Length: 162
Image (tube, rainbow, N blue to C red; front, side, top):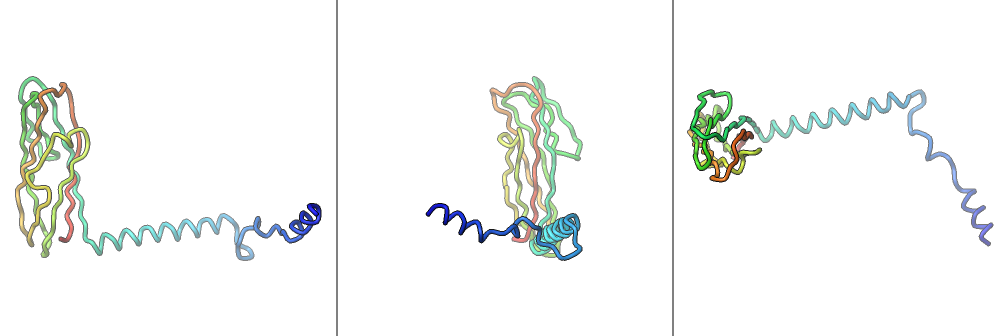
């Protein structure tokens, strides 16, 4: 009886599953290029629709801090330079947020990296009216037991419709 089952099952199988599903004259490379092109176009269209519909703008600022024995400062505006701070000390920077849109926007602040635990802002979610600007104080507090050396990170400011 086992021989009969083998024969019955073996008769119904075909090799159709191993052949590619293509139109006559279409190569595998051409089919792969079409699939990749459609996937890429779909991803770009999805991202474009998302950012157009939600109107999101993201700004990244690097943050730098040196734990040293004495205080030191840096007035450059290309990043949040907290300067040199001894353990237990603090440094403060002011970030000016401006909404250039004719509609209200919410600015949300996020901190990342080695400084994320040491840095805080009074407000992390700020509502800005049309063409309104606000100052936000960003404070870095170095723990008493912090070892000497460099600490870095970055701050993301995400502007979107409320």
